[in-house]
Length: 261
Image (cartoon, rainbow, N blue to C red):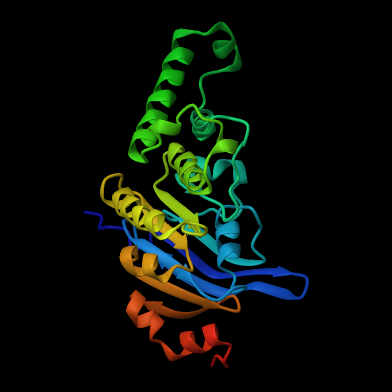
């Protein structure tokens, strides 16, 4: 009888990323457990967003491996990452400003396809069924994120906080099992940040999505993260609960500009 696999669900091994002589990531290794909320924190320039860019194939790692469900995904074409069940949001909102909320979220369903080109051209039953399934999935995301009042509104006219939610919604529309959030609370007011905390909890508990977030808002990190990793100068500096990491002398030194051992 075979036992359960000992492979971590997600793992970065010896990850490195260099731009010329600058190392954005330096021999970084960490794991992500299925069903957890993991926060990556650290001072500006620590390499946090670079980690997300390597994992989601925006950049090729200089060295190391990224493994998801036992498979090395470090050379998977970037357009195939969503098909693996991995999605992300961006620090700077990347939406089609002239399109509606609904249309932006429908773009997130692109990975599922709607039949061959000729089926779409002829509007066959299979193509219609696939399109209806995508619309139903998007409507569920709209309901989940309370975006119904903005459903047919062009993104360009929406408040910044709502656009951040639309960015999250488009990522959810891809049907991810592992979701990377790049500073999701950036630019949000306290009320919006509290609402975001509830959504992150619901993503895990209701939708079964594992979340890794890069975040500076430590009140949000403390509210939702099961585990926290602090980075500095591209390396892992400390790991533990939010309280443990915040009280780590090396972490304090890194944020205050002191020497890091």
